[in-house]
Image (cartoon, rainbow, N blue to C red):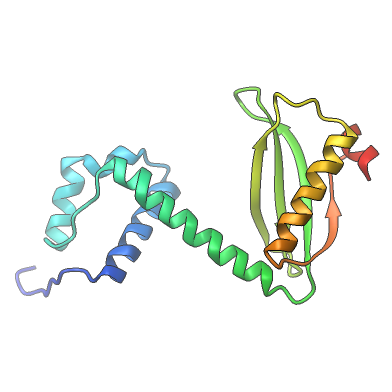
Length: 164
């Protein structure tokens, strides 16, 4: 590979490279520390000496925050532009740490799911009044973001069933 062209990355190219690097890391199930591995650095240096792998703390910190912010912005744009309105779904579950979580997934009119939030409600006693309050707060937040909600779906837990 003696006769190949390498170039430094523009700001936009670097942003895309970092996003692709993070997506690769997540999709392969790799620990963030793989970017600090000397063999990984050697491979990227061989491919393009101008490509420098970020440190694992940068990949899991600033880069992750930026990718999430960009994804959130794209999600909000898609939900605002939904021609019919979206369906707000709630589901309560317990994670491996035995924490009670309330997950909110928004479905577009085409059926595409968007994970909106997952909130730890372990310390709260879940009852129909609390569910109604959380639902109203979520509807207000979505209205402020100019996202139209046309339906709400909950699981069959007693607090949710009573709140309907």
